Length: 160
Image (cartoon, rainbow, N blue to C red; front, side, top):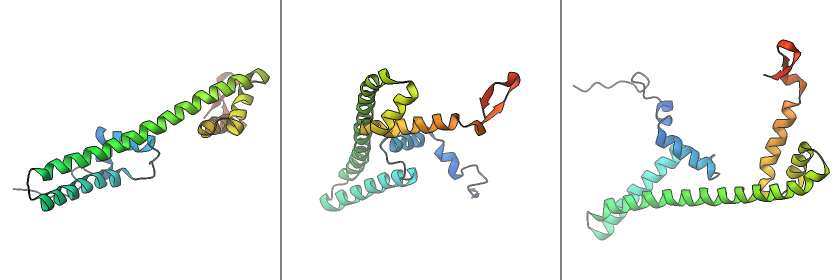
């Protein structure tokens, strides 16, 4: 006898499948490829939908049953390869930007302290790494805000 339960009662809510390792890897890959705005459900559903569409088209066009699963697997694999290619290309651009920033920062650091170097990199450093240094500068400014501190034992300020 098959018992149908609502998804919430059997523990298969929307958050449960998001914790699966392969779903987390897909979400991480999308974020690294700067496609974080794309929902992971849409990416996974789109890949499977495109694979099914390719399988149906191959079967209808060639009328050979073995080409349908072959087209589905190939389409699924190629879409994953395209995501990986984009992810690696953007990672390479980020790494090159950081290397350029280090070179630039070494030249600037002779004139001031580390915070001045980071500020200079955020304002006039290599374009690919400015976003990273703006985030570092924002977190440094936030940690210097006395409203974020509280007194601990011994009167030393600590972050909340």
